[in-house]
Length: 270
Image 1 (cartoon, one colour):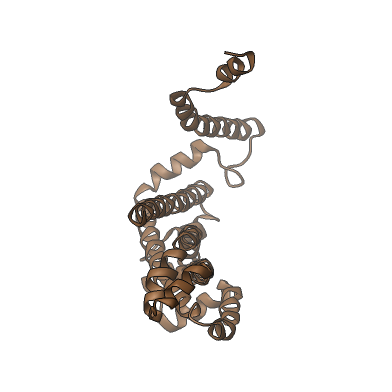
Image 2 (cartoon, rainbow, N blue to C red; image 1 turned 60 degrees about the vertical axis):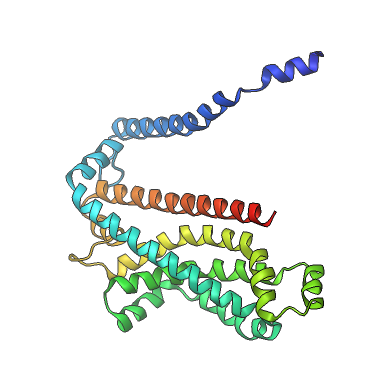
């Protein structure tokens, strides 16, 4: 074995150790951040209404655990429903837009305008139409998360290989056969990418919807943040932390599902 090969082998981390480092690394960084955060609060004597320490946040979670848990489940249900609506409706709209250039030229500008409308102006309008209900929050969540699904899926549906398209047409395939057996399989990777973006956006939409729609009888995490901002900074930070975790879990779960589905589809195609 040459000197270069020996030094390369020595510098290589074994696979089990690499997996352990991948798990322990983020945990150690998180512990260091929490310890430094708490030390900063103690050393600077920062008032808890400005910056509560991790221990203060933990005490708020223990004191309002039941309330925080109920709000969490409500927001998860709203975000999950909003994501489902955005995936279904977004895929159907993208399928329509992919059928002809004149359809895209006629409707895509309005899709873009629809996305640029501020949600802070749309939310009160939806509340006026549908009331302070669970369904209204779902609509707000899907309103925010639907655009990446439409955009990515449309791009995938129209990005078919020209040779494959000519082969389908040569064999007199119908429009439905071209769509189902050529366009849809081609669009799946980009649809998955749009779904991952929509998964994180749906949590943001649910939070915004809770902020406008929430009340004492139907508390979501967005409404809980609004209530806690002037009363309990520890609870506010705990709620923001839970929202961050939910967004991360939605993104990770959607990524895992898309990866498994795409791998199975590739296996079946091969």
